[in-house]
Image 1 (cartoon, rainbow, N blue to C red):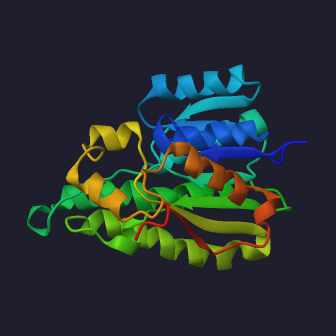
Image 2 (image 1 turned 135 degrees about the vertical axis):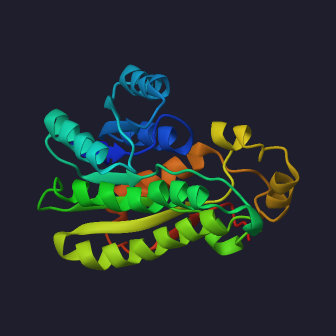
Length: 249
């Protein structure tokens, strides 16, 4: 039997990149998956099609995690389709680097509303659908909280908040048998990091030079850790920050 058989997983921001890979890996491990997306229906439908073609179960559900009404609808549709939630992966996020002199209210609120408020709103709704047997919440953080790169004050602050919230919710939700852990990737080669110009840049070369394993991460490197954290194999882990970055420092 697959380690996530009969489980229901919601993955936010799963139309591409790390989120898409996590959704596919959770499905491959037996979970029925809700592939959430904010704007890329095409991307989400492609992820669902790949999961179904491989013999898994998945649906795509639109909604911005930064909008409370959308979050309520995401979980209403999840309940209608699958009846409950056993696994929540808070992956939806935006990143934009900006030096201190260029930080604006819009920059701050756009990143915090998705990366922090969105995580809180989705967790708030998801918890209502967890069974009495509990489950697993995985918050996607970032290595930036360790390396604190220049010109990332707002983005790094949001991921620092994710780390802190993870510890708080592990204590708060522990009595409900819900485990809460942070999964913090280093630089991962995705559509997003290509579009942002990170891959092939001096930043990329520096990151690889500080990585003992000598390469950029791939989405599958992160998906495998997410499956572990979602499964009973991680049944004694909560409130932890798991860094998946090839030893980068």
